[in-house]
Length: 77
Image (cartoon, rainbow, N blue to C red; front, side, top):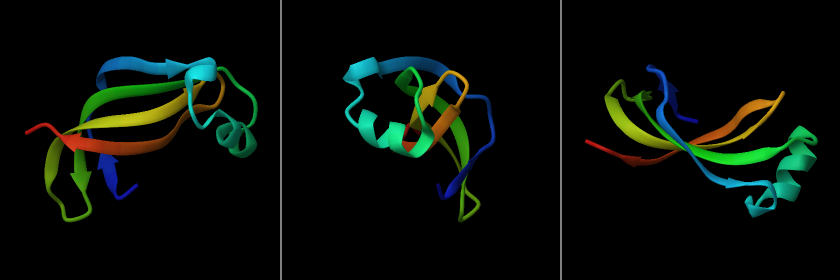
């Protein structure tokens, strides 16, 4: 992750859950068992260059484990 999230993530949606998550086996291997969801949302981020941008973020989440592997998918401005 070459950015920092500087605002709260808003407009959070579930993209996939349970067996619908494509990388379920890899996630279980790295982070353990959990009820997995792939999520998306919007937040302001600070890039390594110092620029602040509004971006769509995707991540994996599980109860008791939290957000993992946050990725920037696209800029919105």
